Image 1 (spheres, rainbow, N blue to C red):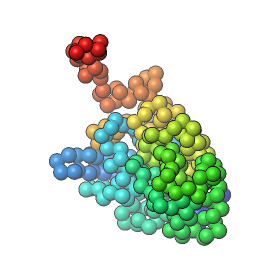
Image 2: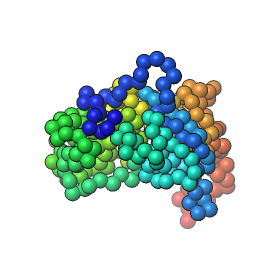
Image 3: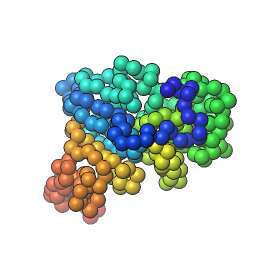
Image 4: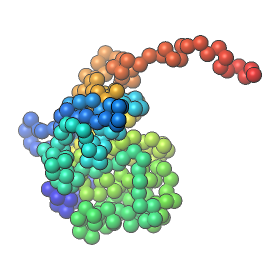
Length: 277
């Protein structure tokens, strides 16, 4: 399926095929990445199920952003293979790009375009007919509460507005898999709720969201399948309830999986606080 052949029914993705045994949305085999002497990703093997809200979780520096950059074709791995919807990311990049949407961390946009101009430009790059781009852009701007700011330059958008217009651009061609790297970071509660509603609607249609975060409470409230990443390695993966296990929360299970403790906080800091010089 090309971008121009994407489903035109609003925000819905393609429904999973009938019957069991559906192939994974993303298959990662032996993925490695080094930066000099630093190993950022150390031989990851991972299969992310289709039609689910998948959380890729880990502490800062765990390798989440590096992994997503390689999976989406933005960064070439040192070794390993990635397939999305059955297509090799590096051997068949055009087919993969047509099937994915990406909202990266540190989002960069064409800031001298207005919101509606940015979507029009994005849609035409994707090969969508002009009338279809206009229709989808209008729907996305309305759903994401950006219709009143559609003619405002992106450079003047707030952080929350920039995340929402970036999400609109990522969804415009109706991808099968949507990759989000810390999409709620720096976003106000109203914008966060709007983004959350759109994502829930999108996954309910059978599409897949892969969502990276270090905020366990958010992941637990949104995701039904998680993979825990620490020091460039997968520590656990599977349905949320299985990864959480007997722990009272995903946060507790996560801390145990990554070997975190409060040793640093227990060290002698009797000089801290009290306002004394």
